[in-house]
Image 1: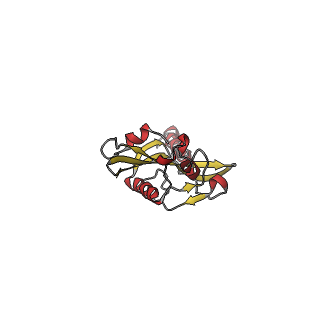
Image 2 (image 1 turned 90 degrees about the vertical axis):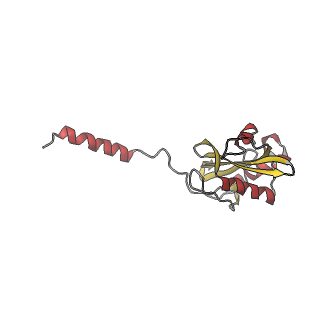
Image 3 (image 1 turned 60 degrees about the vertical axis):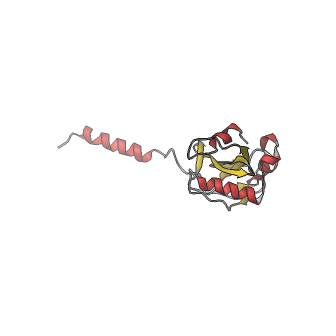
Length: 170
């Protein structure tokens, strides 16, 4: 028969492993709210999000969402931040291409290289899938932070446009 000190160590390790919370827990459920938290577009889909959720667009404010994009981003350059049906199709194209760069655990960059006339451009879409608190309430993912086009399509094979997007942040 085994001595009890040999039986207790594996049991203690098992309890520690089971009781330890996961470091990669998924964000909470997405909730609609008022003001900046209002969800204005849920038509986007992707197979490559860190939390397994499709990206959403919230009304936002000067720092994220539809309001941020419509003001022209933090640099107030409206021509590079289009909010049109054609632009949204390019956003979806970026989501279809998959994650271009994982900035933080739930903060991702999606890229969509395209041509506009003779010039090469890249549509850059940043999404924050992490839990977001609005007036003390967890609203789930923050959603699309910004979306803009940039000149060029620099980046490694498979992530065409990534370096162009990172050179100019929204």
